[in-house]
Amino acid sequence: MKWLSGVSLALTLALTTSVLAADEPKDSAYYPLRDGTTWTYKAGDSKFTVKVTKHETVQTSNCARVETIQDGKSIASEDVFVKDGSVYRLRSDDKLIDPPVLVLKQPAKAGDVWNIDSKTEAKTSLKGTFKYGEEQITLTGEKDPVPAVTVHCDDLEANGARYSFTTYYVKDKGMVKQVIEAGGLKINIELEKYEPPPAPK
Image (cartoon, rainbow, N blue to C red; front, side):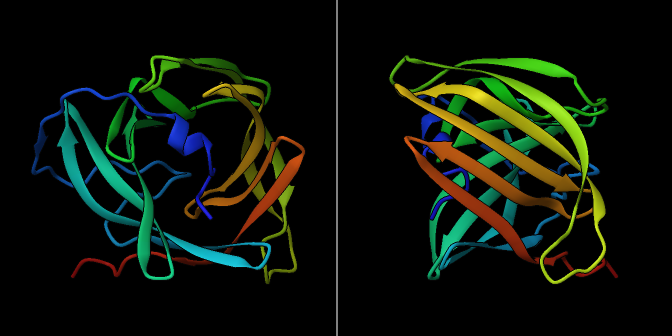
């Protein structure tokens, strides 16, 4: 089970990159990116882990490598960076995205929209309209709702397929839920456990 399965695979463009050592990338208030940050998700009967495994400079961007791990194996990766508070996806499975996809706009207010128009490895278009929202959500194992920000898209076109999704983010925890619909199939992904890295000594 891949995080945003299918969509991540579609967000690719084969270009030459330079990878150098880098300082740890900036955090977003809604997307922690310190090395070792770990999320455990469940989707139906499946479980998988998403972990920040390293940081590196890709082209001119200071990126965090975020890997999806299932049954002890890395099954997908993406490189993300933060610019002016907003989160961008620059690579998917080591393939560049041109231009990088604005995953989460910050600062933003409910109702803000932005358009995605990037190129994939097959030179096909990745297009869609993302909309920012705010709502209350109750986390797994919790009783009281907490404020969350959302990103919704109902017209994402990737590799000839059409997707809709809503992603929920909670401050200082990152993604806590995602609902994906494609081809009549609906997938609910929910955060089961969030593990921040140990505080630096």
